[in-house]
Image (cartoon, rainbow, N blue to C red; front, side, top):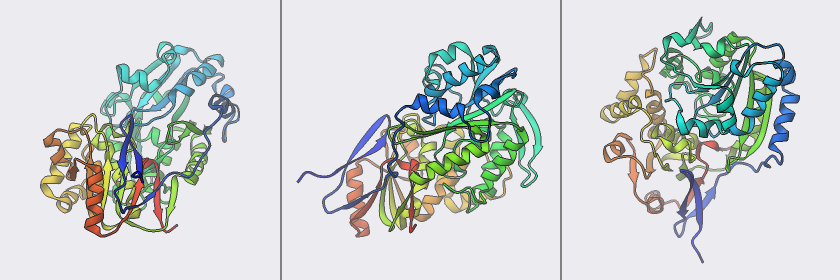
Length: 430
């Protein structure tokens, strides 16, 4: 009998994993959802019949300018499907092309430029007809100061290009997010186009260590609540929300008032994304979701956190990530160096006293969660030797051998496989 093979997302394709003899695999995937047979037709319907708002044609009529937010290259959003139709409707309703800006909501990530920007936008027509620009969180003059949130005192500064636009639309992908509950919607605004002080407040230990700041949870989630308060400061904001399957094909799209439409999209996504698993496993094999999420070690950490609910205490989490671009930022690399030098407990104590987190150290803080629970093993074709040491996890050269070794170490032949990584949320006991 041929050995069983399981493909996990890796780079722009898949990594074929051979299930060792004697292993009983449990493969955790999203619940089946039909692909949209006519994505363009579904998009037209979304524009014509929005959630909690008039049709896009009416919204655009009489407006002098518009700003459309798009996620950066770390999210596989089908921008090439919807940007041109959205812009053409705006222009047909009287907004001049020169008054329309597509703004890449980079947060504190690097800008997307050149060929990468063309890939991100997905349609040369858009680049030829309107301005497409990046957000720079450290550009002081580029932000409008709204003061502080009433509930938790978060400083609120947002990109002037969005704030001053007559029509404001955020676009994005609705997927589980390991801190904010769900991506998309209000998160594209903050931290997407927020000033570094806003972002660094969100990522301080006060928020990060809150037990309700977890994937798929909005109730009482302090990050979500702050994001809603910030969006309401802007007044009238709309959103286009998408959900894609493991093949990156569209399975859902809606448009409308940003909060109401986002909640409708999260309800759809949750029905397929949260997957009940009846037991915990001493060995869990997962991915960082492939390209574009697994370009950096920074984003790889998300894949380590999402499946923790089904990892038995003291178990082994094996994650595959290409990491073609290294750590992601010098700041994150520096945080990892501190984590390795200090150890998890001392590193966390250095974070807890800060009101503003150092840039990108929050991802090192998130890595503490799987480190507290068990052993992390990383299979990657990227990273130089010194970079591998700075991950703070065990690097493996053979993922098949690592699975067999883990099974032998724990004396448990049952292994969970989560091929799509953080796009699936396994939940124990539901």
